[in-house]
Each structure stands twice: as C-alpha cells, then as structure tokens.
Figure 1 (spheres, rainbow over the protein chains, first blue to last red):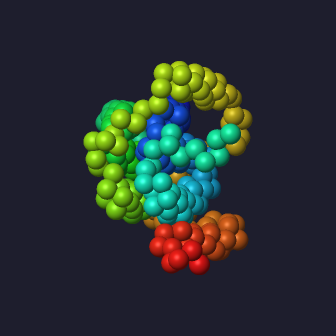
Figure 2: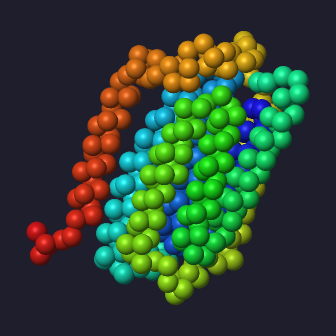
Length: 97
Length: 183
C-alpha cells in the first residue's frame, strides 16, 4: 500500500498548494497549510509501515507543531482583523513597495 | 498487510477512503463559505484517520480524530465565528487568472516530482519484513511501539515540544489580547 498512500499524499499536498496560491481569505489559506501537513503525515505513516515505527513518532511531533502553529496563527489573524477589519490578503499590503 | 479474501476488502476500503479524502479536499479548496470549507476539511481528516488505521497506525488515527478533526478544526470554526466571516460580501475571494495559472504550474511540477520520487528504488535491506508492524501491535498493543522510541530515542525532542507548546500558549495570549491604550 506504500505506492497508493504516497499517491494520495501527493495529490492532497498539491491540492493544499493550489489552495494557498489561489485563495485570498487568510483563514482558508491557513487551512490549506494544515491540509499540506496532513498530506505529509500520511506519507510518514505509510513509510512507517515499511521502514519502522519512527515515522509515527514524527507524525506525533508534526501534530504538536501544527497545534501550536494553529494557536499562534489564528491569534495573528485575529490581531490582523482588529487592525484592518478584513482577512482578505489582497487588502493587507503594508509591505508592498 | 492482510492476506487472502480479506485483502480485497482491505484494498477496496483503502481506495474508498483515499478517494473520499481527495474529493472532499477538492471541495474544501473550492467552497466559498469558510464554514463549509472547514467542514469539508474535517471530512478529509476523518478519511485520513481511517487510512492511518488501515496502515497499522491505530494510535495516530485516534490522535488525528481527537487533535486535528476535534481540537484544531474547532478552533478554526471558533475564529470564523468570532470574526463573523460568514458574510456573503467576504466570499468572492479567489485570485485572478494569473495566480490560478501559476498555481496550476506549481501543482503539476510538484506532482511530477513526487511521482518520480515514488518510483525511486529504495534498498530492500532498509525495509522491515512485511507485516511486522501488525505483529508488534498484536504482541504489545498499539501504543507501546510508539511510546518506547518517544520516551527513549526522541526524549529530547519530546521535552522540547513541551517548551514549544508553552511558547505557543504565551504567544497566543499576547497576540490575542486587546490593546489597552497602546501600552
């Protein structure tokens, strides 16, 4: 099942990348990043079945980091919304030259 | 890896959950309403949990449902509710044609890259004998094979993770706090 898992993982990762590049709602972009992390986790678990359980330990760490990232990222989005009254990434252009 | 009659059922469910995951991920990226998007992403995550169980990672599957589909996605829904983002005015948010073209090109490049990777030959001596993960689970349960390396080999990383979580908690509180006269 390794090849099939890697196929599903690749497709999910690409869907995540396309979402990050095409959406303008900051929260949806953020969720696309979570989808990419999930795709990588699937690859880790598939490899863990063939090459040893260390892959599952790594999934554990990835999930912890994702939880921390979600907490901080959503706090940033809330702060951004308070400042700009929008989460549309097109209208958040303070750093644009 | 199951054998005989069971194998067909196993393969069928594997493909079924994989396809549901991909279809709901596509629906997730194309939904306009953030709430609908979150719910489709939760569907994807449940299907991934099912795939983890099929790949002999029962503990990871349970954690996926509890932490990802449960906690993280609820936090997302909570923020959408808090910021009141369900309005139709906020919904037309896809970028222009140039960005879509760029995204398609990047997507095709990434897919080609990963398919090349999956066809790469990895030496056989690196891999475990087939079915050894399932035997470990029969012998000592689903959690012990993960817990042992977590608390021995990866103990330092595990402890550092707790510091990371503490930093994230403090950061979230500081960022989410309401400013009091710019102090």
